[in-house]
Image 1 (tube, helix red, strand yellow):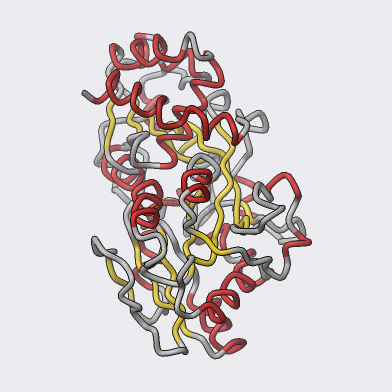
Image 2 (tube, one colour; image 1 turned 90 degrees about the horizontal axis):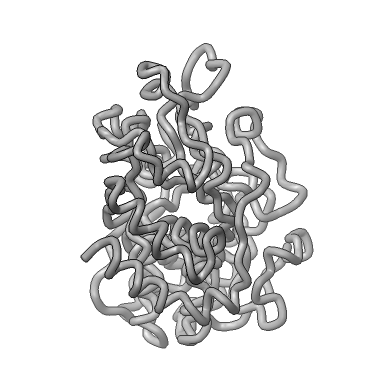
Length: 358
């Protein structure tokens, strides 16, 4: 199963008390019996059954999960429900959208236990502790190795390559306005080509047939030809995903292949960190704090690589071999000052939408 497929499948099988789709309004206090913690998150959240049983065993709380689509859509919904939240904890806001949630007062401060094991570079709100870093990853273009080998064609390596006619009509990306991977990819191009050049780059990508879909699940599982979970039915051999997606494509294979069937274009990546936070107005604050503490425990952190295919935030968390062997880091992912993202994000998204979608 792919990272994304695995996420979806794991989500369906997880021993969580109840899973529902987010409704258009908040503050219902679902599961507010004092024994249930409601976690609001994106569709890709996944955790193993034993790990959630361990949380209940340690704390007495059960976890109810409410999913809200792609991360971008889930964050937007949390902002709309600010002060009247649908749950107690939100997981899935990343560094590309963090300032939007913080500026709107979505989260209440809480310094989670275990924060001392998290590198300071990931603690982007370390002074006020309104959010807790949970995982990190690199948003990168993935390629279907078999598709290119059959055609004796080299896969792209860089952002420049993607605009080359050799790769016409091959790339699919999530929408930057509704998807955090899509937004991360947009920011990678802004960082590469600058304020004066990124729009021209996207004009070239559009002319070269880039396809835009609403969310990551749709891009990876429906449109990407290399997704085992999507049974390879997609016709696009290039997709915006993660550097840690290839291990998901070998999981369960016997014997394990020398290489994963998918790879990454190493000069297309953008660094991402995902955070969780106690929602302002949460009914079960005690349970919410317990869940945040648990998300930084080694038990939870070491479960994430093969559930959500992301890097744990804890420095002392051990990684499974299949993850380290096939989930190679690009090592040179682009980064951007959060203050610059905050200042320009909405304008960049508006301009990008006008150029690429409309």
